[in-house]
Amino acid sequence: MADFKGKKVIVTGATRGIGLSLAEAFAQAGADVAICGTNEELLAKAKEHLLSFGGKVYAAKTNISKAEDCDAFVAGTVKELGGLDVLVNNAGITKDGLLVRMSEADWNAVINVNLTGTFLMSKAALKVMFKQRSGNVVNISSVIGEMGNAGQANYAASKAGIIGLTKSLAKEFGSRGVRVNAVAPGFVRTAMTDALSDEMKEKAFEAIPLKRFAEPQDIAKAVMFLASQDAAYITGHVLAVNGGLYI
Image (cartoon, rainbow, N blue to C red; front, side, top):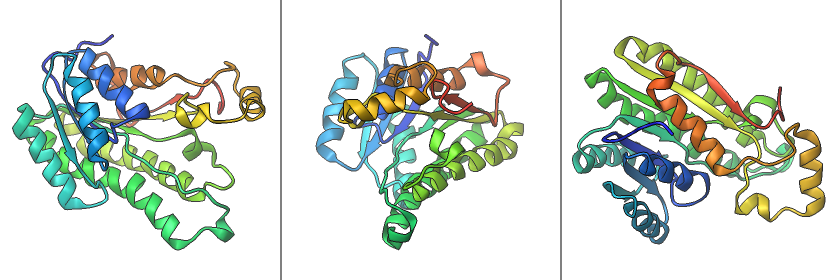
């Protein structure tokens, strides 16, 4: 495991699932962690859990689709933790439906959180990293953003947009010592995939050469690699963690 002792790391959408696993992995590696979400009760539970690893934890209710919330969260992180070294843009939602039945509200909701939220949080964090001439951003995209999926036009568009944003920011900020990369997970074992029927799981496994869903820790290891000095000459890259689902 990479050493993040003394590093200051933001993970958005870190109250449960993949986000909480990401924050946990960084905390275990010695980082001070800042987390945000929209549910205060879940935030409090996540903060209490992360404090058990011995580092500092800053938690704040944040709507990442609002610029003022992102600015306040980043400012709070710098104040409470003493700096900012890594931003992981993980927060995301789904509102699935076939395009002809998809409401404009559902389209906008997913784009606003997944894509605009990544843009706004990156903008706030990169102002800090730009000045200090160092930092890492890792954006969570999806295999769906690479291959598309029926019934998920809004989600696919948002995650494909994150890939384009990642590459553009890598070009903008590389000269300032800031690296920007993305991880594109496939199916990950969470409460959502656990609820799938055995038939649906078997169908998914048929399409995955490794014949299993990823564990949240598989995603965390990929994110931590890209954020570490082990990846010091990697920027603008999209690391696929999908078990071979999309080759």
